[in-house]
Image (cartoon, rainbow, N blue to C red):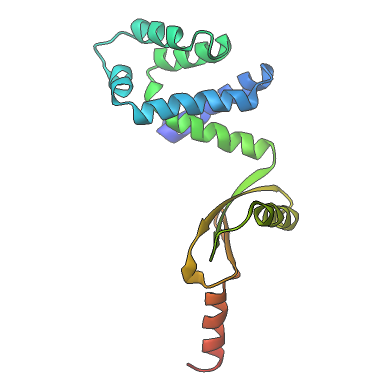
Length: 178
């Protein structure tokens, strides 16, 4: 089984636990925190990956580190991942967890490119317009690229909506035969 499908299975189990514990968002924060530590802290990464450190010792250390900071159900989930030798998939599990949560809550993420920085009010208006157009709650991730000259480019999954001035000028140039 590929790691992405394994991670998806663990993420699905975590989402089920989080729903039962009424902590979907908090569990997302916990799994993100662990994934961040794994990605950034080389010592932690080597500790979890070390075959000479027993699963019991890893679970003991994780239990002490998370005691009082995360729900016991979450701690047991992470310890089960360690027992199954899947602890190095924490980052992938975190990503899949949020994908599943977004799908269940009807959210999509859009990469939005604009020519200049947008105010918070403009971003809220853009999000509202995209939400209305797509029929799902849209979470925009805005980046600035002055090369588009004006307008906006929106990418949602494989769909690209290009309303940039640069594209419009290119189309006009083609129509004029240049």
